[in-house]
Amino acid sequence: MKGPLFYAKILLFGEYGIIKDSKGLAIPYNSYKGALKKSENLTDIAEKSNQNLQKFYHYLQNLNNENLVSFRLNEFKADIDAGMYFDSSIPQGYGVGSSGALVASIYDKYATNKITVLENLTRDKLLKLKEIFSLMESFFHGKSSGLDPLNSYLSIPILINSKDNLEATGIPSQREGKGAVFLLDSEIIGETEPMVNIFMNKMKNEGFRKMLNEDFAKFTDACIDDFLHGNVKSLFENVKQLSKVVLDNFQPMIPKRFHTIWQKGLESNDYYLKLCGSGGGGYILGFTEDFNKTKSILNEYKLELVYRF
Image 1 (tube, rainbow, N blue to C red):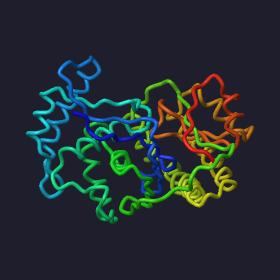
Image 2: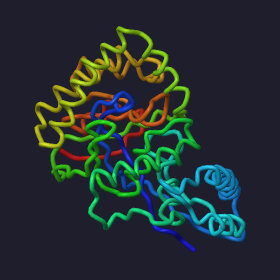
Image 3: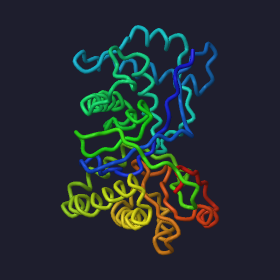
Image 4: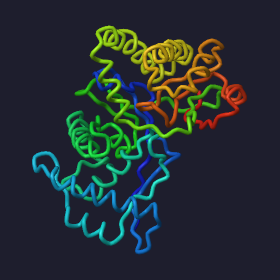
């Protein structure tokens, strides 16, 4: 048995802001993917995944909510007992949606009356899917927006206007230009829950809330607008401002050894960095007008190309 593939995702803009109802833009990232598989001889990694699915099964037993979602749990349990695991190349703790792809695959295979990608995806259907995925993914993170599994399940870019206003969107097709969005590997595994807790504590501070509602939201919204409309020059101006706001206000989420290269990018204008997901490790997202030059400047680090301008 091998299930359909579900891909990683990248939240290009909106990390943390979407918790507080500002805009976000998430895109599928097809370099990493996962699928449900079965085997009688499990490797250590597959065995661990199988045990995780066992725990997830018990969690879903308590989640079965006929009004919102129900699962064919007997079938799910039988498959787990027969050696099912999630075979995934998506790095965990890297902010690219490893648990999201798993949740999407379980919903796809075992949910009864599931909403499918082939339907006319109205706003109500998107919100219902997001709500279901939020409950399912909370098993992994304690609190989840449901966006990662939604993106992985639909495999299309999603524009988050607010908590209650989502839409499938198109992004400009890539060009063969010098500019790029890239991932920088921090080589540190990040954990979502502690980072979200730091953020929630910061939210108790009035100055931090003001910064989030004004500067952070303003530059995030402008970046999304520029990206969707292909306004590359304006995009880089706004990404620079956003990068500065993040460096000044989200330092605990940026691994210490990256503070200097973050600042260097802002001073030289060669590249700009921002958080990818909750931070604390994993990937850092970068924007540059000259990817080859940035690769030579950051030659000590592993960079992965996401999108070309």
